[in-house]
Amino acid sequence: MNSRDYLVRAMLGANQARILAVRTTGVVTEAQRVHRTTPVATAALGRTLTMGLVLGAMLKADETLTIQIKGDGPLQGIVVSANSRGQVKGYVGNPHVELPLNSSGKLSVGEAVGQGYLHVIRDMGLKEPYYGTVPLQTGEIGDDFAYYFAVSEQTPSAVLVGVLVGTDGVPLGSGGIVVQLMPEAAEDEIFITELEERLQVMTEVSSLFASERSPEAIVEEIFAGLELRFIDRQEVQFFCDCSRERFERGLVTLGADELRELVDRGEPVEVVCHFCSKRYRFAVEEIDRLLQELGNSRA
Ligand SMILES: [Zn+2]
Image 1: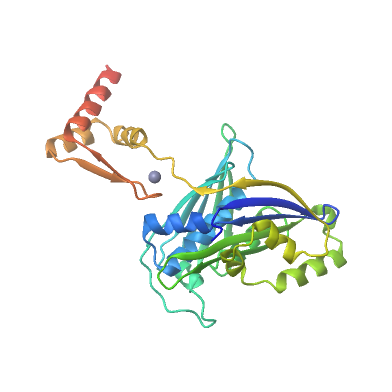
Image 2: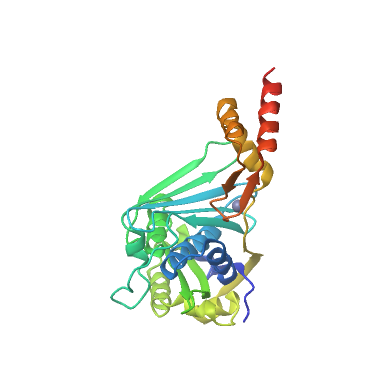
């Protein structure tokens, strides 16, 4: 299977619309492996990771973004973080959710997510972060991001995102295609109608990405006959930048009293990274050292 994940960017027509298409089968397989998510949780997280990569591809070089989906469903929310270099990480509140298939025989992502809000926080380094919030539409993720683009970024967009999960719980295919209308095309009824017709025939985006076809081939097939120009491509991966040092700094922020309490308890401390489930163990002597250093830095 062609499991290499990457994102392609293309322009359609006379620059009337831009397309971002990304295969995320490997990304979602890794997410499923580290979080041991059930199929419905895999689909919800996988769709959001895919959207994280699409939004990440719209960032400037040093920017990062965080997506928070706060729904009242049994999944207990989704958090995804991405950068402009094709790296994404994320987790769900409850990876063990099990729900019966919905009335269309699909994984009940909307029910798992529930009602609530989609937040996008764009961190632009020294500048004030940008916050965008919209109410969730269906909790199916694709609809929610289409609404987000329309309302929060004033960009009419079609969002197709899907994860196909095998009977053994392992993702078979995952990916997304986002088509955004450029301002100049907003009045071009013929072009919009043509676009809508193309997109209507392809609802099962996950099976497209489960095939061996490249993202370019998938895009070419959907928009066959229209003027299409590929701009660039970027490798994408599930990547967590956590480290022992980072968690060490986290322990230090607890303060001297709390650290002393941990030392007095006389047991090693284990911390788990939410994003990648990696465990870091700190021996009592290490915590004691952090406590000493904290004392020295204050003196
Ligand atoms: Zn991590």
